Length: 279
Image (cartoon, rainbow, N blue to C red; front, side, top):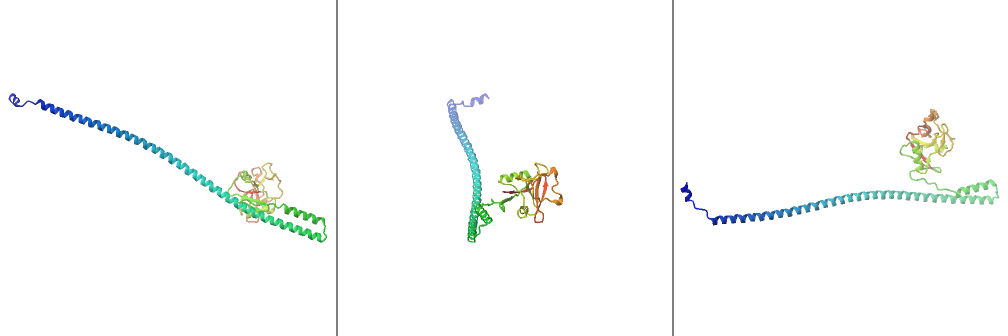
């Protein structure tokens, strides 16, 4: 072994130095590359963070704009609906105005014709030497009526009978609620004080239950109309002994059978029926 060891050549110090220098240089290059990559990584991380922040800001702006757009769309839809409602009201008012104008023209023409007829009759009376006081009173009465012709045009959805307008509901409510609805319309529950007004088949149809403005809720057994007038003309269903409800039935509804006229029934005021308004 000693002999073998002695045979090996000793390591040259210069070679070792060269190898050391080479390794040192490679290490420094690797360190430089590492530093460069680390710096590039940090720059990329910074860029990434910046882009993420900008993306989040854009997302927030997008959400805000989307919300604003939805609010504007809602406002637009509301304004469009209000515009359409106003247009409908305008069309209705225009139609009512035209109807009023037509009725006014008709009434004016009728008044003028009445005045001409009165003057003609007066002239004829004078020519015939008639000075009867009754004739004079009649002429004056006709003249007053002609001068005081009043315009009566019913609102849309109402029907005219005589000098009054009538509205029949399409829904059902209690007697008090029905009366309040009529008041909200500038009217009252209908007062039936004549045979002409009792025949409501033409207005509400047969086999219809409708509240009318008659009650004894103030004093049991004392029936009064909503205008505080006492009951005189009566159309009770006597075949069933109406009114027969006592204190439990203080309001009256109109019911039309297959006959030409309907009859009255007293009933619980809280029950829900249709109703008729009059003005």
